[in-house]
Length: 323
Image (cartoon, rainbow, N blue to C red; front, side, top):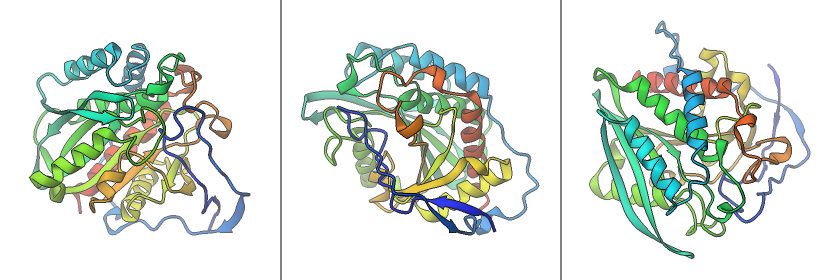
């Protein structure tokens, strides 16, 4: 039985809260408690399947190329360039979009969720989300969002590389590059998550939501000092499954040293009963000093972190297939 520092009442803000200033993370005094590791779910039984591995160097290069576009906020020319970049990578795949005009406190903005579908033989869908927009209020600050927007865009591109080809033996996997995750003024229930709020409502109306077996959000997963938070707003059994996948890969030390509620792209789906998990490291630099600042640059990231999250996510998909 190991010792783990838990932050049971940590106020963790999402990667988008507090857009006009560095977000605040309120961390109470650490309390040393004895705790058992997360209980692996039934699907985490002994498995002889080979462990999956992404091409971390390629994923890191994608992150570099995405970041090189500069600020990529909704409505900007760089945002349009990144849309084309993503779609170029999906040529030959089953790709579609969910495009609409968002009414915001700063006026109307075009929003475009990009969806790539990789069919499986089992009846059901696993959805992986990651936002590609950057913070609108920081558009003139030099903020390029290498981690916050860049890493999530890139890891989904690498997942597409891993998934394309023959039909999957397991569930269908849908990759969604979400748009409008960031607030255009200040984070609130109505000024944030524009893309996923629209998509969740659309999928509820057309019957897609009931087919989703699990949904995972990738956000701020490139931090060289990687420590994925255990989000109290996520589905516990899915968090446990992700931990079991990390354990099988030997990456468990990078997961769940902190715990608390996080607001992110999964919330519109959580509210509709979809099993969902936010895979996010919301302590970017000491006391989160790099988050939503011009210091969010490539030199703070590591291909190893993309490897840890990428491999763990692919193993989680494999374990979900076995359920």
